[in-house]
Image 1: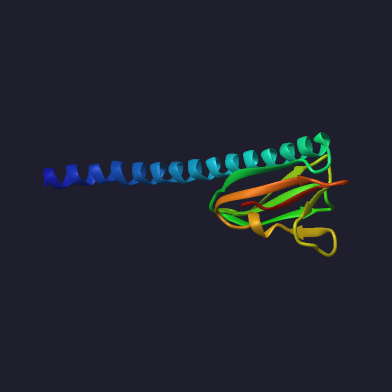
Image 2 (image 1 turned 90 degrees about the vertical axis):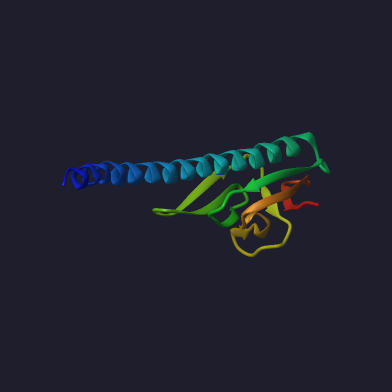
Amino acid sequence: MEFLIVIGIAFLVIVPATYFFLNFSRESAEEITFYQFEAIGRDIVSTAESLFYSGESSKTVISLRMPKGIESAAIIDKRELVFNVSTSSGYTDFVFFSRVNLTPSASCGGSVCALEELSSAGVRNIKLTALDSSVQIEQGS
């Protein structure tokens, strides 16, 4: 009987501790992913602005590691870079504002232009090229 009581108390301690540990681990991983998207967005926008102010035909290729959870990437009204990310609580948009016009490599209709090259997880090389009135974002080599 004493053995069963000890085992019961051990389960009462182990089960909630495991739940809290797994929950904390999941939340930490999600927070790290959020910081990665923040860094990627800031990196793209700051590089684009720097290239634009350097002059037409300035080019660079940046290597980005897109985290899991990315659903789509788009440019809205040529000034907003938006990442739509799937999280445990739904979908979240990360929006980055640029002081220079951003354009995708493929033509797009309307004010929303999809960035297919940034819409999936994994390592991506992105080529940024300063044009006359904008910075073009395309798949790099």
